[in-house]
Length: 260
Ligand code: CIR
Image 1 (tube, rainbow, N blue to C red):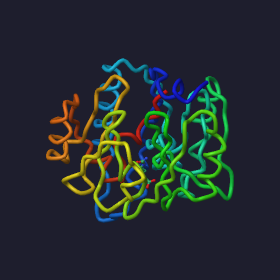
Image 2: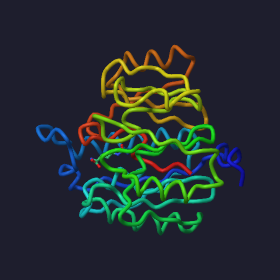
Image 3: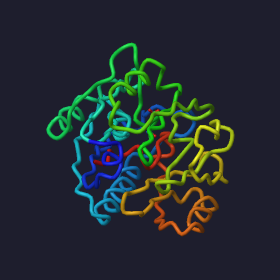
């Protein structure tokens, strides 16, 4: 499959994972605010409804009480065309989240996997118009990024490593809202590495999160109305959602699904 084909393959399945009761113990940087599990589940249900209304067939994996962060399924696999790269999450407590995801994706994809000493979180990987941007972060190290480069060779046009600072993942700092447009949190990445992309700067620092679909629809959080307005003013079709409890667990809108 050529890089162009890999990029424009129609995505129609979404893999999600239920929120376990232990979600209130998810890893958070601000331990003064714990997510409310019941409310998080209602917000997750609306997220699922949005994907279904957009035409996605949703497959919901059961939650795992031993893994409070398992709803953040994006971090466990990176899909590039026919290949699924199973990650080795940077947070040790999340390492075993990958099992059921690998099993499910193994039915439809060639499986490759990041191995020690490599670490990689899917939240650090973004595929835009054939270019794979990969964040070097607290969660994804050089060994993991080298393995990702090898696993995707021939499936992408190029891979650009983007060091990120002050945020968890690349996609906390750089969020696609169209195939050529990203919202960037100022000061978190060297923007010259994003040359060729249209950049919108996030107004409410660290509060904006988006999920951009191949249909052109973009789901954005209610938490950053000024940034959402800036995105909408470009003619992008946005729908807003309240994901306060997901944000409280340092998650965003991409992290709750793997789109296939
Ligand atoms: C963590 O710290 O791993 C989770 N509490 C949040 C992960 C969010 N993942 C993502 O945005 N891709």
